[in-house]
Image 1 (cartoon, helix red, strand yellow):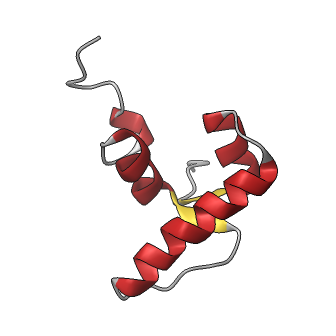
Image 2 (cartoon, rainbow, N blue to C red):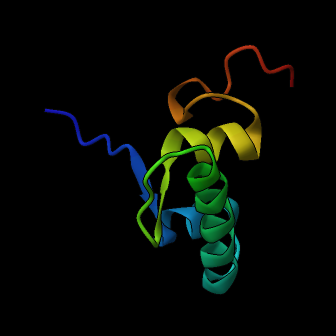
Length: 71
């Protein structure tokens, strides 16, 4: 059984981006508003992992974030 979760909590966003907790909540809220406008259900304080990585880094999920990226 995998420990993979399709969503990220604020603590994970804080650690990933090295930002403050209030800023992470603001970012999650913004991303969830975008998803809501597209017709998706959202949960306050949680954000789709796939959408997060797509919007922040430009790729579909965290498992493929370095594939095809020139360093």
